[in-house]
Image (tube, rainbow, N blue to C red; front, side, top):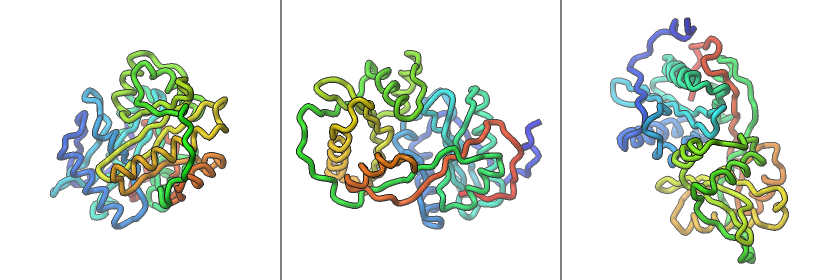
Length: 307
């Protein structure tokens, strides 16, 4: 028997159909605004991903209260064997077991897909979120600083042989290989998996050096904010100023588009990347811990609250 089934049912109901409607996205945005207003910090929701969910798979779990959405938990499946989870509960609906039920549903879905590991993303500011992660047997696998562009992007003399272009499906295996070397991403994917990855994560770019692909980066855009993710240059092409030129150019372009906030993330242990981002105008604005939890894992302490 699932130990979670013994918990009390919080007010409301779970909804978890595949895909999100415009109304859902609007409600999630309002919920995030309410949570951040009380707690500060940031929720790693990645709006570009939420807006392009595959219609055949459940990735989003919504708890509907009497007056609308009070809880949300999303699955972010960047690789077949691992997924990230990020969610929230409205301040007025906490400590009622809402996040427990969302977590139960999401991890059951992951278990049905044979996903071996989930990473629950928690802002280090949120003691309740960290407490919940520990209560389900979570341990910190790694931590990342989030950085925001606060200063003018670094001015550089552009090297014309360095170019950036939208990724095509034919670039899929190169992108995967590049990410594998930088982030321990699975190095080989089947054609169908590449197509799924491309559909789920639009905004992927390829960095060329003298018309040879040498790196990749993904830009996630919302109305006024942009996130830069998965930035990687092949090891043999590092140290040539490619990363600095690409990042500075991207930051300037996004500012010119009117993005009020431009952010990225970096491992707390990656000193060289941290130095690069600092010199390009980004500052550390917070830290997120990634708790490894087992899908369908141990008993939950349902008295814990969570962001």
